[in-house]
Length: 101
View 1 (cartoon, rainbow, N blue to C red):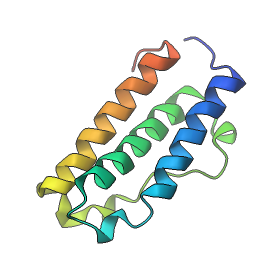
View 2 (cartoon, one colour):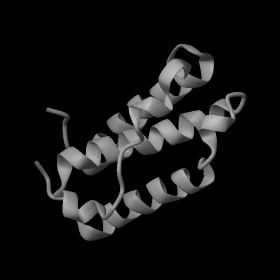
View 3 (tube, rainbow, N blue to C red):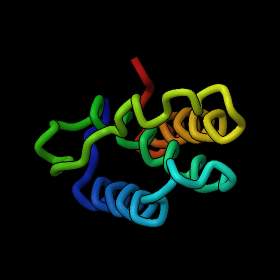
View 4 (spheres, helix red, strand yellow):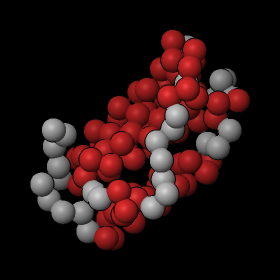
């Protein structure tokens, strides 16, 4: 498994932080599917990074609580979140030159 450089890791963490900042109230905006997708994308990135680097390198970043999605999972915006999460996870592996195990 290729080691992530500090520079690449920081770029990925900055993107996660930016996406999370701009989607802070996503759960209260079911009509904004792009916000849900972006939030899911950030969560997928973090999920991949948790498998690729030591937890200490991620700072205090944590995955979204599954309860946040709750009944929304079956709705279009919940599906947008899950799709974003899948794409964010996959693309993080691609960018880092790794394969999910």
